[in-house]
Image (cartoon, rainbow, N blue to C red):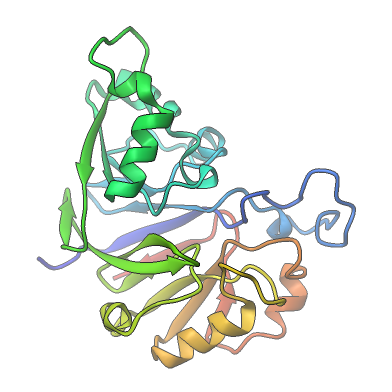
Length: 259
């Protein structure tokens, strides 16, 4: 199945603490540049018929309100850390207005965490006002959400498996510091690659800025965007000046149109 034209909105581009970080008075956290204000990482993907989000972090409710998202068909999850799933309960608003369950797509590890943390939504005994969820367990096999084909990509967050996703010519990967060769082959041919680039200093489970740049170049993807950024990386303006011309820092509310 060919992929329709997609509109991608970066709902958040920050790491688990967000930027500014509570209690911090560094140059990034006190910056007047709106591009240095980063909610927890998530993206909104829209075709003419289908609307989905990747991850529902703690800022999910505000992100949906800010972008005036009145329709939601599905949520895809990358992994079971709280900054990527804590806001799931708020999909109940879509249940109420759209009169339907929301489809969830997650691997078995993430599904286990979702069923544990949101046990009341999956319990046999239901009560009014809880989220209505339709769980779909995914593997590395491609699948389709509405009219959007999805190719899962396995990456590693130290020892934790994380799902990246390719949607047509657009690939989104967050929380990773290793990609095996078989999975790199799934990324090749993309026109846009989004990668996490936490900071400049080496990190145990995230790509550094240099490592993320090297990955975009190795995979020969024409355009790269970096996300899951911490206040330790530097201001948006200063890091932008250091990047190759085809690589950019993503920022909250950035919109890309991918044909």
